[in-house]
Image (tube, rainbow, N blue to C red; front, side, top):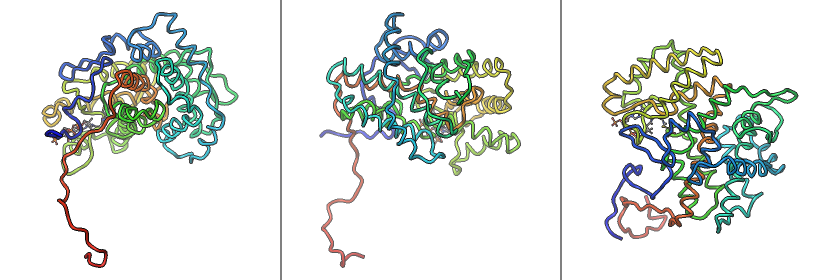
Length: 392
Ligand code: CMC
């Protein structure tokens, strides 16, 4: 081997070529397959965006209808999966439950691992797009003690997610179009973000040819952490904490700047965006609209806005180019939509699913080699073996 370059956290290493998502951190540009995130968030449905990310083109109506029908036809989850869910304590975090159930899916669909043709790949893709939302809804229903249910095939993909999650036993569930449209937008904004921690995880697990479902399960696990998708839950908990502490955001700014204190301002900073996060701009505007439309006043929104303003004027944040990211305002919207805090990161996962699939598919189609980084060894040189009674 030649000289190995050390790049902790892969800050400067390209792991692949990709034609899916374009991101310019200096200018705050994000495009899926060439379409700007602003246009997609404003005009498209989440399922169209999923199709676009995975297959490269926006679908015609006919292509979209077929895609949706194929997904509906696969929305069944084996009844035995419910026993696995039963085994979890009610208090289990839904991200762990969803990751485990996604991995367990493979036991009921063993043939989905073999993806030697594009046709096989398509089958696996449609299966996971269909079953993953069911598992996410089950994770929530388990927590809230509601009976498990399957989807309603008369509904759109996003509306169906809402109904699967929130329909109470013996009650009609009416889709609120404001809620559905806000969720549609949020899912689109989260749908892909090139080689982030979870997408890289999906690619590296998939690169051993382990199959799509377990690769997605690993992606969910990676997303869970508070430095990645878990930030959306952490942001709301932080804002709540500030509120309960009397609303003194300056104190928390100080904590975030103190290098002895592990506290970070959650929802701030990004590995790639060093100017602004275009998703955060759209979400901030959307938060105002959604809360307005639903007639909700959330004092936490004011705390968030105050905190943002202070940080944008603060030397520490300015010097390090730390701006609010996608997760800073998303939690406020999720909460307004009636989604419980511990489900926020699951909502992110629902949005990111098409991105993970697209990354995995591209990786397999390009016949990428197994992902296997190198290291710089810093341990002991060769040592003679010492017998146990001679060790001290
Ligand atoms: N609060 C306070 N200081 C921060 C923050 C923050 N949120 N983010 C970065 N810094 C500081 C960091 O301490 C370091 O300072 P110094 O140069 O003095 O050592 C400097 O800024 C650079 O930070 P870094 O940790 O080297 O940057 P990174 O690219 O490794 O980390 C990040 C990026 C997103 C993990 C980080 O900014 C962070 O922890 N943010 C808070 C968590 C968060 O909101 N995550 C969601 C990210 S966006 C959606 C997603 O990926 O899921």
